[in-house]
Structures are given as C-alpha cells and as structure tokens.
Length: 420
Image (cartoon, rainbow, N blue to C red; front, side, top):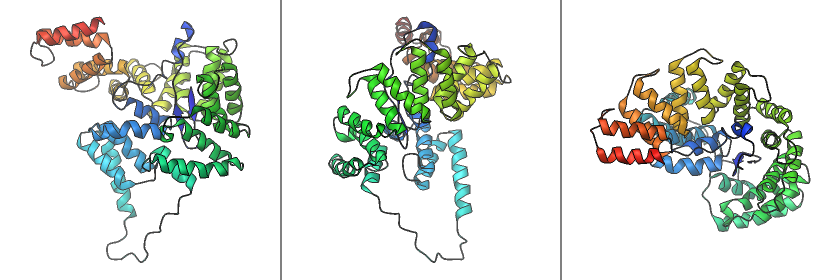
C-alpha cells in the first residue's frame, strides 16, 4: 500500500493479487526493475527522499535519465531547496549524452537565467538576502528528504525537540516523527514508535496520518495486521480528501480484503483520486476503461487518462499509451509518437517496454533503425527475464545478425536464459 506525507507520497511493499479477473489491478503498480525506473516511479509518486536515494548513485555512474530527473528535482525544488546551478550541471551531463528532454530543459533554464540577469552596466546595490533560519522540524525534514546530509545523532536530538511540540498538539510534527521512526535515519526503523505518532495525529483527523497508519495496519508493521482497520483508516483519510488514501481504499475494495469485492466503489474512489491528478489512479482507471472492468469500455477515455499519468513520468502509463498510439486505439495512430512513449517506458524500467523498444530500434518502427540500440534493449529485456528477448539474442549470436559476429558461447548463454 501507498503512504503519504505532508510533503510527499511514499511507496511501500505491495500485497499479492487474490483474484485472477482483477489481475490487472496491480499490473501498473509494481515497482520497475531496471535503471532509473524505481527512481522515476518514486519521483512521479512524490516520494522525493526515495527518488533521490535511487537516482543519485545512478546519475553518478552516468545514467542520463537519472541525471535529467535529478536536474528537475533541483530546478523545481522537489524535496530539496531550489538550486538552478546544480540543476544546470545535471542537465548538462545528460544533454551531453544526447538526452533530448535534458537538452530542452537546459535551454529553457539558460533562457530563464538570461531573462533574470541584471544589465551589465549596473552593479548590484544590495547583497542577496540571507535564507531564513531553519527550525528543528525543518532540519529533521531536510535530512529525511535528502536535501541535507543525514546525521543520525543530530537527527535523534532534533526528534526529541520536535516530540515536545508534537505532544503539545502539533499534528504535522507528529506525522514528521512517524516518518522519522519509519526511516533509516532513525537507525533501525522503529515501526511501533512510528505507529504511535501516526495514531496521535490520526486521532485529530490528520489525513496523512490516517493513511500512513492505515498502511501500517495493512502491512502489519508496528501494529497487529488488520485489513478491516486499514480500510477504516483509509476510508477516513479518503473522505478527508487525501488522494493517495482514495487510491489505497480503491485497491482494498477491488481486492476484497475486508469484505465483498466492490468494483463500483473501487472505480468511484479511483475517479476521485484521478481527478486530483494522482498518476497511479489515472493509470489504473485507464486500464479499466481499456478492458471495460467496472466501467464502460472507452478507448478515448483510457488514452486520455494514460496520457495524464504518462506526462507525470509514470513508466507503466507510458508503455500503455505507446501501445495504444501504435495501434490507433483511442488516439490517432502515430508510430513516431508511439516509439517515443515506449522508449521512455523502457528507460523507466518496464521490461515489456524494453522488448518493444528493441523491436522498434531493430525494425525502424517510427524512427531510424539502429542495431546498437536494439541490442542494448534486447539485453536489458533479456536480463529482466523477458524470454523472447533472450531468444532473439540467441539467434542473433548464432547467425551473426544485428551486426554481431557469430559467437556460439553467447548464443548458448542467451538460449539458456530464454528457457528459464
């Protein structure tokens, strides 16, 4: 289930599917498995701390998508203070590798800087204003979201100070303490302490606390697992307008975890969450409109919702939008646009999209064929467990296709992976 924060949302472990006919319920929601995918997914969900934790080492290793996303985080102040110079540095590194969106972002950033620049013949008359001093709560939040270096001893001191204010009735700080005790910043997470702080804020109807406590009851972390209690808490948060709780409640109703399956209620809450621009809800509702599950089959509405989620960077939505665009389902058929979306989804970590992207590069579907890129995508898809990709590589190595020299050992290795 999904957690929320006053400043972000956070993805937690998901449960196995219970009903075959609702298998698609979590298909779009599983965390991607490859480069930049989980980071992109966390960023789209608003989980800036997790996104930065994943993206920063990838960017340092030279991944252009991770560099671009980190640039966007610094430019827009997502989980950290706005820092256009650091944003520019990351964009520049990604742009140098041919990343199109990074090039566009870099050009826009430079144009904006030129517009803000003072005339060269007039000296500044005042020094830049000093930033306002941070409170202890802001310092703790900054460590949690990664905008300040983590210091466990200092964080523990800050948490004790924050606890005094939270005990006096500050529900926002109670939620902050819940997040702190759930995190690695506290050393070993103390889920029981996190649940206690969430319960304090939930008792005052704080929607984030209600949702997060509901997620703890769903997972059985720090509390005795209880699906009925999880659903009750999600319901309260959802009725209070929390879009992530609305999504979580929809999943529970669709799974029938705490009572009969309620497809109508599931789709009603998905619609409410989607209307608040929550990408996961938009993508899930889009899939239901595509298949006609609990709602009328409507390809145009499906494509519209997938586009909303895809524009927010959700890789699963990008994949499905690409497929629909390639087929002309709900949108005008456009192979170039379809290729663009599917390649984005592949870069975001969707294994099925990696296979499709490999075929696009090999056959030139919507773009110029490129054997080197096709091979790279086939390898990523094969390593991610897509048997068809491993089979294609086995054939290519056996016969010397795709610009490869015949290599019996590599052909045998990929053939073995295809059989697994």
